[in-house]
Length: 182
Picture 1 (spheres, one colour):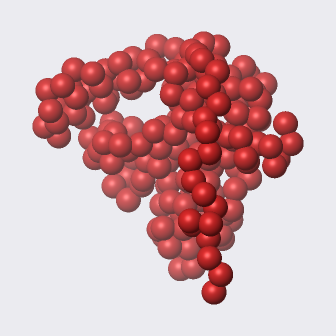
Picture 2: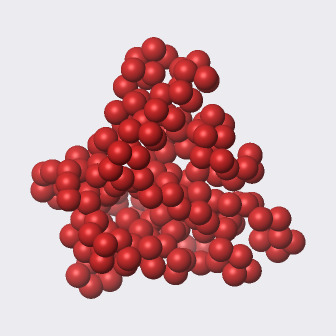
Picture 3: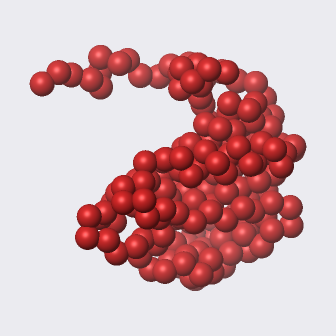
């Protein structure tokens, strides 16, 4: 797959099954994460790979955080199984480092670029993935369970695997609706 084809056909696949990335595919995904814009060369990222039985542990972290932060009962019941929706999850974290020329927002953006680069690398290798955020990306209880600092940001959870169904998604947006000239 060439770069233009990748950029114009990439999509999110919510229904993912085994197999997840092979060791070789994961090596490419990891390298892609580290090739993103990084003002100041400070590498403000951390990645946690969750697979196998560790997905159950992450589910328990999700469930305990939903309880601690008094979420709706329905959410508390369902959250334990969220990490089982894919064979692998990579948690992408912006590890903030005080820097006179690189503000917090740029460090979060860099980590977001890393997550997107990993999804693109997975897609280019025939895998599927979806970038999920929501409550568990903002939860202070999840951050604490993952031993993150308060200033760190979970930019997302990249669920990876093999798409369960082949579903090419149509283009949703018209270019002219979003671009103008000054």
